[in-house]
Length: 291
Picture 1 (cartoon, rainbow, N blue to C red):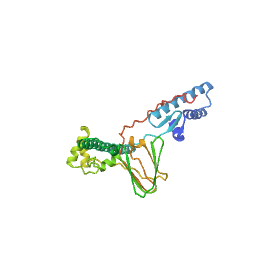
Picture 2 (picture 1 turned 120 degrees about the vertical axis):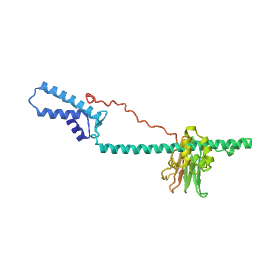
Picture 3 (picture 1 turned 135 degrees about the vertical axis):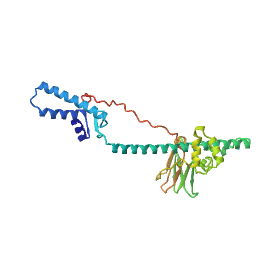
Picture 4 (picture 1 turned 90 degrees about the vertical axis):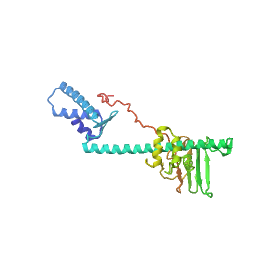
């Protein structure tokens, strides 16, 4: 209890600080013992402090980062524990919703890309020749839409990986996925206007395991499939990196000081997050502070 009280009062402390104070307190209470007995008692007290700190750490009452000991708090009651679990439950449900949204967007991308490939193949077969080189637009790409009167200043880095645009008027930016959706390549799934025929086509363009998701998307039984980006502004122009589009710029923002917007739907394949393991040994060592 003495060790717990001291750490709680200090908030942040160390093994040596707690042990020194307790040794001093117990030494002043009994002045009738011999020097040899005093040395033995000091060692015994330090050992008990070491044991107590390890117990408190095992109960998650304190934490230890190298030589620094921090107070976390006493165990909570059942009501508080229930409240914490509710908060954790809501956090995980939100994460599930985010994963569902990412999955739906990736499904739309696959359907749109495969539809585009099929359309291009049919066009080549009908024309009996590949399309002229000057009529081909390679993926990924962006489209900048603005007034004909807008003055645009564009600067390109030497390696052609960065492009800096300055606009004196409002503008819109759309990525390739958004354009393909507007062309109907996503079979109307993104807007909830998917016909029975379109649904049949869409299901044929995804792996069998994902077909139920496509059906649910068409029925609108899964949450809405829109990726939104926060609004903002930049007074020095809009800068793009080639990697923003080749790697998928999820929610990438492109705005001007007068309220222009970026419309982007491309998302990266979601990955699981695993917290970094703590390489430090959490056990207390009586000799930690003796260096």
